[in-house]
Length: 177
Image 1 (tube, rainbow, N blue to C red):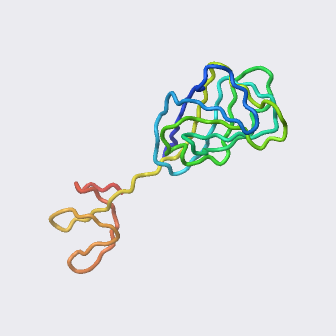
Image 2: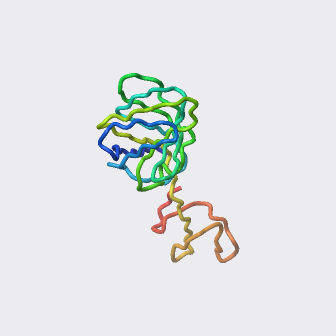
Image 3: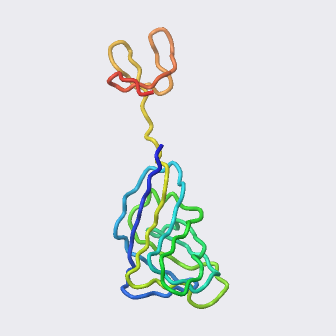
């Protein structure tokens, strides 16, 4: 199964720079979304901030999408000038693949220092990126009773006894297993 990627891109709800301190949050309005998927497993999830300044190395961030906690991340490090930052999400939620709507909210948690931790620069945007393996749709088994195709869940009756469904067939008679 091929790996798919969902991208959710957003911009700040306010048009000014925003400093983020402990137990504060900053929200971003979703601009574009490549859409939901059927999740089998998440292989990687990242938070990208296009233009941010970091003042402290003593914090973690909580990331929410549509009000649902979708992961946490450690700080991107200390950097004095505004620059892009990419952080891996820890324990990413399935909602990153299946969830819809809402906005992206970032909040600072688990800090032992006071003062500003992050500064979102005017014009910055945030992207949630999740790589995932998509779940396959279950396929229906069919058997041919001599005149027509009938659904077969586990076994079928062939006139002389119960037989297991050994092969999956489509209703048009073409085998697909």
